[in-house]
Image 1 (cartoon, helix red, strand yellow):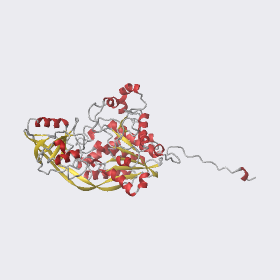
Image 2: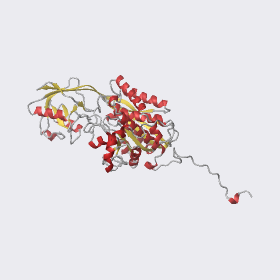
Image 3: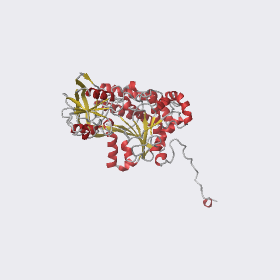
Image 4: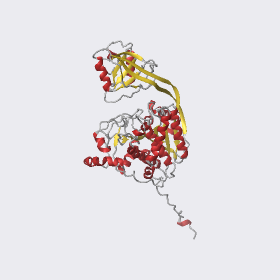
Length: 510
């Protein structure tokens, strides 16, 4: 694992002793804001976590007033967008909405109850895009395939599951394939249990008539049910009452008031939450961080490149908003897409059991499973150089494409970003670097109603918000390392000296 570049391997033991202090109070955290915002360092100092928290407080208030969430296509999302737009206009921006259609789903009620041999409720997490059972639900005996993962009809060895509920393990193939194969075997519904400790929050990836009502549960609960089934029949009632329809939502796009329109730095975060909670870390934190950076940026007149801020809609439903934005450029304005120098993505920057993670665009720790456009490693280095400069430990996080930078990199736009962790588990080395609890989830409240203000690690939010500001301003001044485009005069450099014209000697008056 790549870590803080100024610390060699032999120095890691000493670094570990100071890691918690470094996280709690990085070099720039205690300095007051600079009166000017003309350099990347001044921008980082200008970002105050108290202001970022004020945005998050507003996001939480909105969620509480709107059914507990800020999901795409809901009144909570609309109210959140109005707040962001109001703050942008106060800062001198002219934000625009980019509308698109998407498939809306909302769980009205869900339960998973054993009716025989015992009567008890089992926790469950319905899969996105799973069809509704209706209000009355589905009742049936549990049936498991002979091959636990249930990825092929042969895994059921010809068994007829008509009227039954399939109990299947995660692994080998997609959740959608498991759901559809269980349906082919005759099952009326499917339960997929995790193949590792922890809750299972999954998606079927899209609407399909072949899907059957499907939910997820923990590995422990799945194994407990299998043990019961070995003793005799187990009957369950699964209710998944849902609203499913086409709706419209939007992205918010806001360009800086100055800068070269032919060399654009894009900065983005998704604005929507899941339907099951307020989404304050995921991804109120990233949205609030880039909002505060935008507010501070428009106070400066010392940068060269246009900065385009984006708050994406419907990320939680499959990166829909960012994909729509990029695909629209590909189809209708490819020249505009080529003007984007690089894209910076911020999806969860305040996780309670956090890491300070930078997308590993240079693949020094993780081999990327997606294409990595040229310029991405240089974009990553903007973040890592900043952390090194302030003596802040950091680690690589996989350049996976599993957030809103996916559509950009698939179309050749360089990218990088920051991440404090979601449903992965903290390692011993990460505890040495950042504090926290080994073996626990980075965010135990990921995609739950408990993702509220109490779920935010303010130290992580401070460190990352300042890094958002630093990287944005650094690239607003100069992207030459990323794409080779230079400016006549760097925004934080000296003005060119005026030179008195020289008259050739033979033309001088005698």
